[in-house]
Image (cartoon, rainbow over all chains, first blue to last red):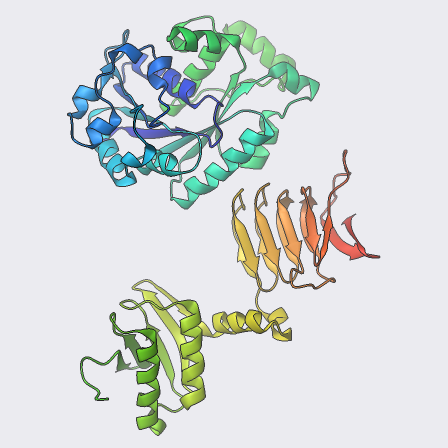
Length: 263
Length: 219
């Protein structure tokens, strides 16, 4: 059976697309699924850095597309998980060295071999975005609770719908629970009312994310992290498991008690 | 001109009437010229008939379709009733062309055009222009633009930009279940909502021009 091809996109830059890709890919691989992550941000690659695999790059996505190497040669195996691979983007090329048709073919080939193909989309809505979404059957739109990020997410959802990609889910990243309680930040409900797409999960704001990115080890490897736990829940939902919704501080006493008991 | 295989338009007949099939290689001018000649040569035969324009092989621009429509009608009262764009896509011409011509002339008949109905949420980046009224069955999100010569009706929350009476009609109004936009425009006036909270509407809200300024009335 063909695997799932998932594109992680946002429109706005810096909302956590690459972090999401790295953590979801790692979690799914830990659950014994075979996973390949593709960095389509040609010219501004950084999925390899987040995964701590920068020094192993020999071939890249454009080499595969141009036939300079086989796709197996460009796939870099993760340091910890033998069933997790990444295909890095080319750093010295431009976005238009790849076409949507070529991406479609590559994604089709990969999804025949892997359970999950996760595509890291570049910011923006130009050529790179069109390449990234071409081969995907599911889209995860990442946004932060800021008006600018939500505005861009809305535009991106419109473009995804226009390209007939119907399976769209939302991930709210860097939600600051304290600020929501104070009324200084948009809540999950506010964002959902505006974007009206199904919510896959909420990731709380956390300093650990920055630390893990700088160390090149995805957060989900660490047990105590709340953000890591949120990514694990999102991965489980992506895998079809039915898991209770994430907290955003608005569900009061009962939710907090449940969280105390669970952790 | 002889009516042979190489003619720019083939006129076919079936049970329901005539079908015009323009040749893929024909220029628009040659199509019009040929049709005029053909109607002249057999004036009575085609008089007051209905025709289907088959554009599956040769596509025409909307203004070309409109011009061909006018020419055929003037010449022999021939009406193009349907335009076939592909095997599963065709549209009845009557209303479409009248709207095209109405908006070009800008005369009174455009107010009678059927409204444009949009059956989903308008997200950022969408721009909808209606020569008459515009009805949105969903929200209008920030970054979307709805421009209508008549009224704008939103069965949802209006957060984007709405311009009613874009042709200068000051009596046009904007209706929505909730109006929370960045900017409202009616005819030549622009309004920005006041800062701070606003009362939640019970049923719907209407924006209209009262005493020369745009007012939002909660109903």
